[in-house]
Length: 295
Image 1 (tube, rainbow, N blue to C red):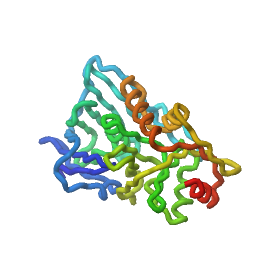
Image 2 (cartoon, rainbow, N blue to C red):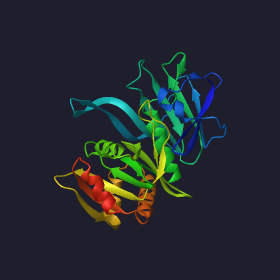
Image 3 (cartoon, rainbow, N blue to C red):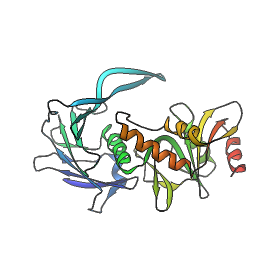
Image 4 (cartoon, rainbow, N blue to C red):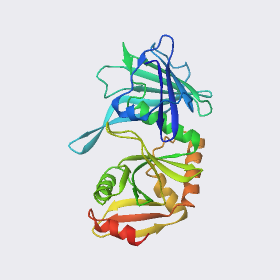
């Protein structure tokens, strides 16, 4: 296919192959997100030839490739992806560690323009222009542009009440999602959410991580910063304390003062509307009862 659109978290992302570009083939993760609407919020043109970063470009952010072996995380020194700046232009250079073939890519983008260019080389026939890690990187910078929040969190909707359970790896996001799923709630996602302040109020959206993911969204009216505990306990968080604890769990590339200020502002406004609490919990039905009793 030469062009298609994906609707993820309310963003309509258009991909279009250039005249000499590759055939575009979305992976199974995104088939349920294909949008037949030809209009797009952002257009990414895909090219197949090599692209060199401009001479004088400055690397402003570098991400190591984290591998997990037997539950232990290791920092692989291999160059994974990095952000580069040249005057007002931004570039992401990346490899594809999960790809069956060895290939690289450069994404040229801007925080003010909605037309980006993507060069993928090392592939001969067709390619998924939203392959990991490009999927998360493109979505992250769309949240930056739109003043939204990308966060490590699980989210559920229980009888019209939306709850977000935020924490880094190992804090219990998936456990909490399973408990609510067993109780009959609708799980929006168990790992990564995008939060948006819409005309209809604050809403959470899933981001495709698993092959069986389908687009899901919900309003939310409470945020919990979670931690495993011997007992279930809730402690309300206010003001700067709430903001900093939420920000610590956000996905963020803190290489620019403007990017940091945008995220800080979005979280501060949200915390002025959405109650936030610290939640220590036991992994059983009793934590659900605690939350419902405090509704």
